[in-house]
Length: 545
Image 1 (cartoon, rainbow, N blue to C red):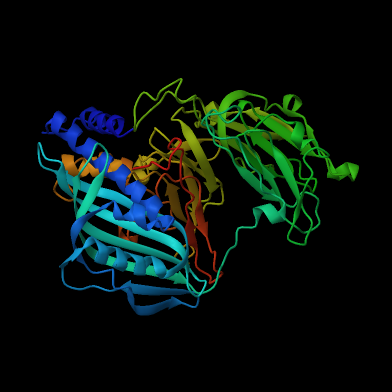
Image 2 (image 1 turned 90 degrees about the horizontal axis):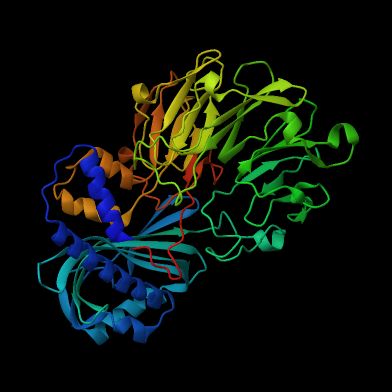
């Protein structure tokens, strides 16, 4: 994976015309060494999570130089009424025997009553030619619960020296902690209740049919039976499921009785009242024919979703991913936009940052009477930049629906609605954001009355590590390459359709291999926060180095 990433990174640099002075064989060896160390530290991560003292001991030298952190938490500061912050102890460097080091490390682990996850990640590393020894900047995390039962997230940064002592085994010679801080939730804001709530399900392992393709899947929420309770539709590899809210914290699977369970597998979903009759209809995007299901609650008086895709005019074959809904022409009827991707792995993008060989996006304009007309080309939005997600919003306050599209391998688009036509103004407004776009959301996180923009992208540990070798000076190197590995972006809006990238001012949002997400006031304090789900398949192990 990482050799491929290195080659792609270099190719991208050459593609944009950047002259890079480097020794490919040295770069490859350094990254191979980094990957080997990272994989060994992954084994240490598992041992730490499992509190396996014998396995932990194998990763440390007979004597280790340590500094800070191991003395446990010291100062405590309250951030708000549900979050505290602990700084962890610091002190002079000292050389200790492995047994003493393990006792100190054990005290850190004993701070936690339970550990959900622990990770050592190699952020940067340097190895002298011909030597199996090097230095690395390590990020260390523990997520669990403290002895009082509060959820705690510890994050530490350290400079380490390590030596390879076997084919794939390493030992840590020094571990100097630069900073360490843990955040403690004094009350739980959320609990995982999918299974007792009746919406939990298990998919086949990735790589096994029918879960053997990389296709986005989504969910939609609406009150489908007009009882004042929000219900849930979830797409999945084995079919689509509809859950009715029973009002007592549980949901009931009504997929079969409403006919939703008979529909082909979908990739995305959105509820909206297509015919203004007072109930929520359903649009399903798909790899294949797109689908529209009419809610027959009105006029039949019984909840059922009738697939009328052919007569509605939406059964267009596409690699459809994410649907978004708005009244684009101001006629009082809601229209549907669908992002078009491609068969990744069968078809490869013709550029890693400016691809144009995806499948065309679709725009279904509502004609009334549950009829739609596909008009993406007419409206200027029929591009093929490997579209992943989209969102409508009135960005400039002129009372019409503008559109932002996050593209995976193409630069993003910001379409201004100029009355019967969309015009891409992303370049002029500085929101091209070429960073493998996976999600988009609008919100007002400053409470100034202006819409802001959050774009979900990937941040890559290996990619940033390679860039640090290619461009040792901070802030040097091609900005495009750094953007492709940097993570999510937040743009501050001024209400007139102009945006300013303030991601770094916010501290950066490196949320891993992120998908979807966006603004959400999850603690109900009146300020919008950001939620970023993340993760991907790394094979049969936890390896994601």
